[in-house]
Image (cartoon, rainbow, N blue to C red; front, side):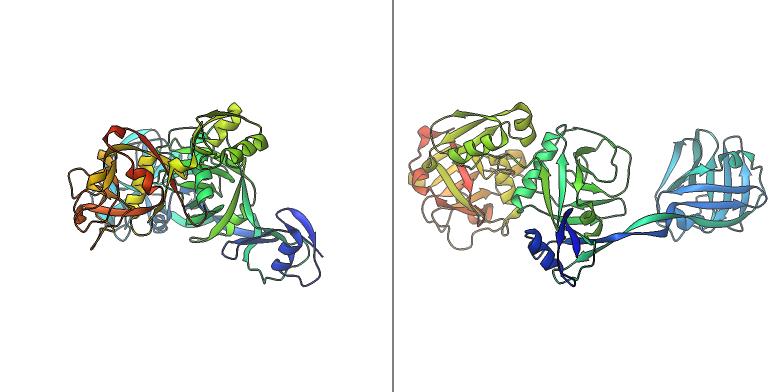
Amino acid sequence: MRVFVDGEPVEVPEGATVRDALKEAGVEVPDDVVIALFKGEEETERETDRIRVTIREIGTITLAVEDDRFRTACEQLPGTRVTWTTRDEVALGPIDVSDIDYRTRRGLELPPYTAIVVLPTNDPTEAYLLLTRRRMAVEYVCTDLRGRVTAGRELVDRLQGGEEVEDLEPVVERVTRQVLSKATPDTRLEEDDHLFTRVVVELSERSPDSAELLLATLDANDGRLEVQMKTDTFTAVKTRPFYELSREEIGPRDRGVVTVRHEGRNEGTVYFYRRDRVPVDSHNVVGRVKRGLELIDVATEGDQILVETIPERVNLVGLTLEEARELAEEHGFELEIEGEGDVVVEQEPRETLRVLKEGRAKVRVVPSEEVIDVELYEDRAPKSVEYFRRVAGMLDRPVGKLKVHFAYADLGMVVFEGDEKEGKGLPPENTPEEVVKPGDLGVTNQVKPHAGLIGVRLEESREYGPTGETFEGTNLIGRVVRGLERLAELDQSDMGKTVYVREVTDRR
């Protein structure tokens, strides 16, 4: 029996399961990620985002519906009449919108053939559906219950008043629907079934910053993305905190296109589009799904999906010099080395797509003993850890750098510069209770005037934290696991010196 795994044919015996097919294909999939099973296509009917309003003895006008609230308002139209007409407008009603949640504005300028619910007397029980014939400024109280006339515009121009609304019905269309479902390892397969275990995204070189956000998130999450929200139009996934994004490639959001929102409330969110939408200035096109869009279709909120990119990420920071040379050779770009040592601590350009486009990368290396290894308490102090990573340039890299603010061995601490503006927003979290130990890493929270300073404790204290503040003004964010003795060697002559820090986890 032939089945397909990520597009490749595999021969399995009758009655084989998903587990059998994956084993035969040599594909490994963690137990907690989604697998999509495609069994072909079928013809079906579905309601569209349009409704037909039939006017007795006149004909049918088709309206595009912006949301279900507008549809609910329009469902009351049968039995009402064309109440008034002018050169610019036609009104149908009255209808009652008192049970619908809406917002109001006055003096809107609307394009021709807009459909909008208005309140001429400000009474929601006497609302009207207004159809504009020309561009006009509407002086009535306008709601945000809106649509537009997509067919029958010539009928709108013929209405004179008194005509009765006879009927309203949704526009139904026949579509070809994929027969898709989630599969488990024990799901039994049939001939020509298709399994999809991962989404493959080809990145756009015109959005290198946004692409790096996606790549960094995948790098930090072992190639997984978690579905945060799903609508009929798109699937949005969680991403790592990132630096400020700029406007990059703007283009159509067709099915299969991947975008990153670069401004607004959900800045940094990655969207996989399931239906076509027009371009918007707030979304950068970061790539397109080449294979596995079926996974995007079946995954629901909270699901984990595997994602691969073309190209793969090129991040040299944190690698040994030997590993960096091997990666450069593998991807065919030149490596320029600055400094002496065996650990890469900086990379320019930082972004994968810029490195590959320019065909080069400049790296700074230092001896491994000069890199301070730290463990961060992300679960206990999430806001403060994000702040630390942002200041150190570690939101997307395992190695960052801090600048020495002052170092007093006799006071038992080393303090690094922070970001005063960002630091003022740090709430108290994971404050010490009885004692701060050597190696404890902390930041000053908003309780104290010098919020945002970062420090390491060199000796135990029952009074002061790593930045010299009392416990209520101190957030403990981690600990130094290697290199504390090097920090103890710093003194005031080292003010302004750069210290490299590397985050160590179970993965690194």
